[in-house]
Image 1 (tube, rainbow, N blue to C red):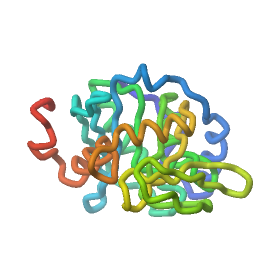
Image 2: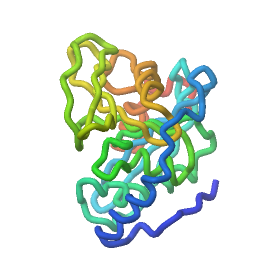
Image 3: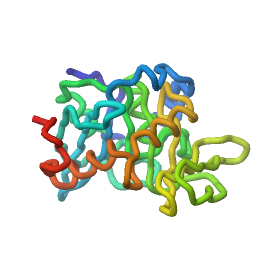
Image 4: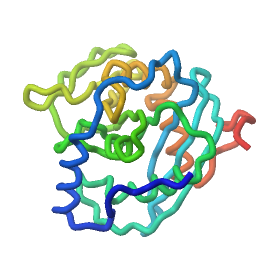
Length: 232
């Protein structure tokens, strides 16, 4: 699949922030797909090997979470590490991986922020708008906002707020484990984002989609026991 890039990626930090502010106005915070209609969910993660960004996408059947397809791409890094502007460092690699994907999911779950971002456009929202496709941000740490820790049991969550605005949910995906920070990416509401992340999570803290994508991005391959004899 050939994707059309709506803007250049190798820009100044000031230009990058302006692009984020413009694209943030295009984020849709309502559902475009019901969970009952979801058949495939993809995890997206980005790792780094020297001066190369390595993006991985793993598509899983839903709700079984059996891997069904994968894609991996390495792209030279052309943007510096600046918190809040990571989409410009990681986005080109993500898009390169997506161009190689031969099974398109109903929803993407990114190991990144969605609207829980100072300019309301983390990588999950940025890619969601670029693709105009349902996406969810599921990050391991907070970038912005305040919250009260959720109860210890699995499935508990509390709002993540910035001023008077709710920008995400702090979700306990495993009893007693550190919570994840879930937010709208694009064309998904917060309640659906939380429910889908929880339904994609099994015995680990991370959703299976994110866990598999992380393994692929960091190792360059998935271990045989993760493939469940379903991935090539």
